[in-house]
Amino acid sequence: MRLVKVAAAQMGPIQKADDRQTVVARMVELLRKAAEAGCDLVVYPELALTTFFPRWYMTSEDEVDAWFETEMPNEATRPLFELAAASRIAISFGYAERTPEGRHFNTAIMTDRAGRIIGRYRKIHLPGHREVDPARPHQHLEKRYFEPGDLGFPVWRNLDGILGMCICNDRRWPETYRVMGLQGVEMIVLGYNTPATNSHAADEPPARRLFHHRLVIQAGAYQNSTWVVAVAKAGTEDGHPLFGGTAIVHPNGEIVAEAQTLEDELVVHACDLDATRFGKATIFDFAAHRRIEHYGLITSRTGAIPPEQAAHGTKE
Image (cartoon, rainbow, N blue to C red; front, side):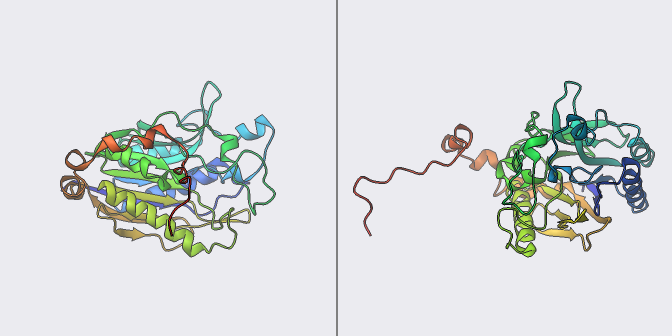
């Protein structure tokens, strides 16, 4: 057995007025609890250091950049890295990254047990829009503030296994899991900040949104025989509710642990990375069963193009 005891560190709401030090203090407290529980890895949400700022329309470059980190670790996050290293616990969390060249990404990092950053992922599937849409009950301006990620879907050897990362909307796209699956991934960690209401369909109930969330992480785990650790920022941020649903999914697709609140909460499970081997050697033995000669449309076409209708219509 290759056991990795994981703490999915769900975070409750972060208000617009909360500073980085206040937020990091909450992350440190979750890390302390994880250390007491004997955890090897702590996974925090997307944009773990701030509120979900893409809900606001901003035109000032300085105002936008105030939400971004220019280095990691930095003064605010150093206590988290230091405690993680002292506790010999690997961590992963998301934040808004501004590069030295002035590029902006929705980013997640992963450390080893010594607190060294060994992996960086930049969100590829950006949802939302660029300008204010008055028809929406809330704005989702990720396309305004972030560039699509430029690092692909890499995996890393860490904690005696093969680990990968993705962020929020990435979890809804099967290509996310499959590209990492083709690299032998054994655990995918992801953070998300998902509104409790659908900006395209205000009458969609939260229960359906949670159903879709569970559906995609369970399918991704099963179809690639990998653990999936999905961690929410939850609760109401400045009047805008986010759903929870933090969950750890077994490689057979079953949820083995799930959050019960919308607050700061640890969801802990000892994940056996060897549990990925059965699926990878049987129904999802890619080398034996995949037929890439028929998959060309996946990388040659972005949008769906239906076949042309027959000249004389179709028979009833």
